[in-house]
Image 1: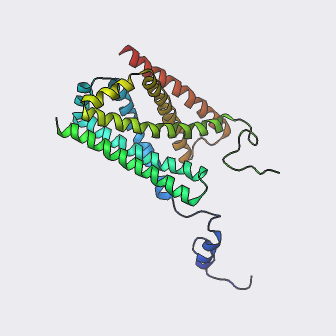
Image 2: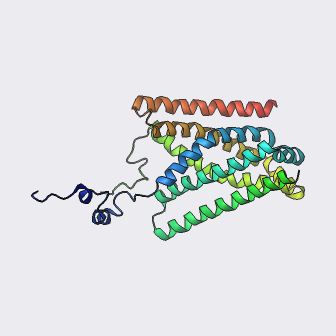
Image 3: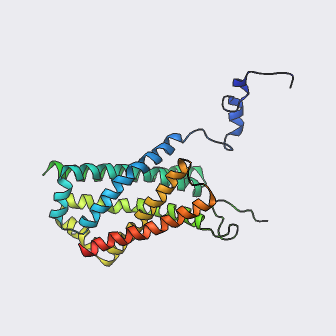
Length: 138
Length: 126
């Protein structure tokens, strides 16, 4: 080890040539945002989930008038929208981590991920529209 | 030798453990709850639409299959909630000792049963 180089060139974190060699073997150095989103939505879903499930114990089997009156009031409308958005964001990250474990071909993984994301966007938009219609139409 | 391929390690390569069972259950209940979001969105749309759409949705939800699904999702929700709090504690660096991992595991199972029983007692008595 006669030749010493600056640390910035010798560390795996900064040396591009090392990154190129470890690609597909080590960390992708991406995914922290998803990890954070998963934990933040998890924290939000503790109160939001308890509120929504407790409400559903009362309203899931009630008649249309009762359910509509509940969803048209401000606090239930707001918390229901927040619950649906947080739950679907949480589900997208969670389902993707399952897909990454079980779907082994890149094309199938892309297709399955797009299907999950597309379904989540569709369900989120439909839920928000439904609640907004009741809230604005009261 | 046939090499073991993660995550297909049961039952040949890994001995059954409470901790791994709870980990798998966290995933399975998460998938079940994600599927439940379809019925949730459907129900919200039905309440907004009213009329025939709501009548059909209401009939499905109050049918034996509907009630069974609601019961299943309530168990899945309470389990995923309690187990998720256990995971958040691990993320924060707490409870990694094997003894504590087993204690929190049993606590999650007990809390799931208690919350599910309380929820359905409320439904039946209200």
